[in-house]
Image (cartoon, rainbow, N blue to C red):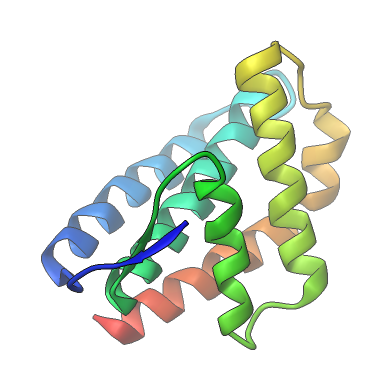
Length: 132
């Protein structure tokens, strides 16, 4: 569920610092050996960047479908194609399967999508920085 809040630029800046740490972690991790953890980290970066964007727009998501609603909110931005939103949603589903069912993310999945995930992250960062 999407609810209206007061935009908070200082909180957004703090969130961007945490995201930066996650990105540094990704650079240091062996993605073939730790593909599940790397995929989860990509998801967390995308989720936190999207939450930051919502925060700057004066919204937040709550409830059982909060993460799904985050991705759905990106329909407000023409920068994201349906393919990109589908990829983010697929990553969300895989992350949930990993976190709640112990399922691994295959290294080929991450290898094949790493470039597209990086482009999504870049777009999200550009959008949030423009709003700061």
